[in-house]
View 1 (cartoon, rainbow, N blue to C red):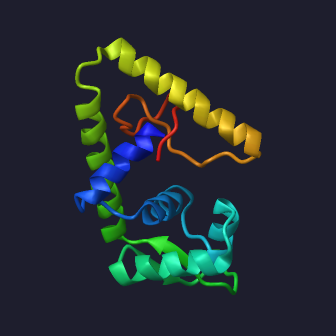
View 2: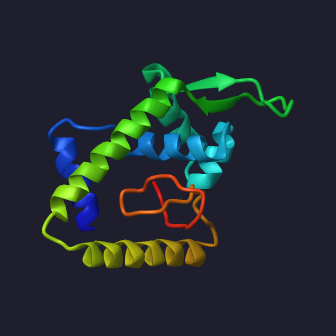
Length: 153
């Protein structure tokens, strides 16, 4: 997709975090602490793959292992304050990049694109039988809101 190409172009400049880190941190931010097994299930990936990705998050200080807050035996992963800051910076970078791409579009055109992409993402979720956890947002930049609802992350 072109949006993915836009993201890749940023990566070639050395900007931003790996896509897997972005996705894992977003999931931990929205859902709270999770086991590696739960993350693997959420992304439909092999546990060993997620384990390697999590190891990178731990080394970077973006996530940490904690005792299960619910008293279970398995240790869970939680996003750290540094991870939350890195994720916010990455989102800001994504928004700035999209703002540059859409600079010549009027507000109605941006809103229409946003609504169609949201509808598309939700149709994919319905087809797969899995919703992506999200915070509700109120505008094209993805700012958090208490009402309304469009895909984030």
